[in-house]
Length: 531
Image (tube, rainbow, N blue to C red):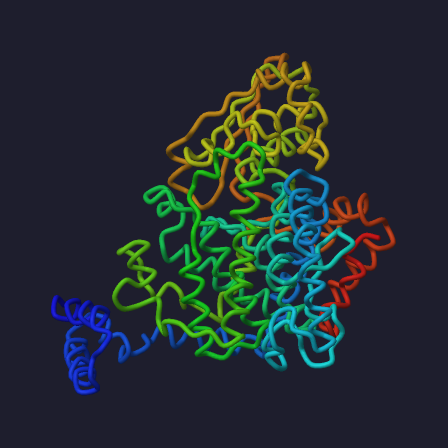
């Protein structure tokens, strides 16, 4: 190694090298390189896991899906779009749209120039290789910003819509991987899908692939234990790989390109658990949805534009799994791939609150159905949650992830509406504070052992001396207790109608449940934008 460094220094300091000296130097470098660590990388073979994974990903765009999986996909796509729409009026969503608007002008002007044969973004790289694709309209390469009246580039659109989708806590979650797939996968598939003008059937398959790939990554790393041990964020990793897979599917990447896409995704995977200290939900929305959707689309567009990378970032020296945790078994990345579809293992939230609060709200609702009571009759409420879960929702400053506040609201309102979950001033309401004082949260080590199942035990003491107890083992909306299509539609309608109106809401729901008949995913655009 020292001779290599000395030769390179000599080259820089000797401007008058003869041709013979140069040839001698070159031979010396090549001979030395044979012993350098990276010399072996060029001939490194691709691991069987990578071959299987990249092949599966490249073939996903044409692979038929089981009917029950397609139905489930439509539930989650509708649920995620409803989360985007409802999130557009919340601080993270407002910030996302403002950011996208500030950056949309330059892109739109450049795209328009490219459509006229100009060079605002450099020479036209040819069909499907850049922003300008032949004689297509200037807006064909742009993508929708949900609930906005302008378009943006696919990378900015993915970022903004990802933040919108997790602007609150109404999006879906995958407990085993400790991730929220929908808030990143659907925006990434939508942005890349609009950029390439894919059909609704391919959009469905792209979303399915994102759910299949992303969660498997953090399940392989160890899920909750990985996050606890490393302080790295599982959400940013799972959603990042899921977004990349969905965008790569929309971009029609082949197996080799999918390998490079995984490499760029690994390089972009980031995020630490400090988001739990975010009191405005803006950073959290960026980490869960915006950053990951943006990174996935970025990687797919780079590779589609001709960028190359490392052939197998999952094996060999300094690979992604080794850098993450030496205990990871790469076989987990392809475990039951094509047999177990992770969208069927993903929960849709009945309540628009943080996942750990879902079970306690279910428990209160169940108790009231069996033994009706009013808030004034309640003397004490004891809630037992897994230790890690309790730490996430214990007396938080944000209403939709504060267990004590949301249960107090449930006692008073007899439900937990989207509006109530986002009414921060109500956290100071004297009546809410009176009810909140009755609620005791107890971290439970035995329930911790059951994770990723989010079980709870809720006990009530009433003024008449009655003691009520409810254990929730399967939260409504989880795979063990799924919501029906009618329930998903009802939840989505409640979130969509106040912003889009009843007519547009009905048309959008109808369109999503008939995605197989949509010839161009851009056909959703008029239903997602506001005048």
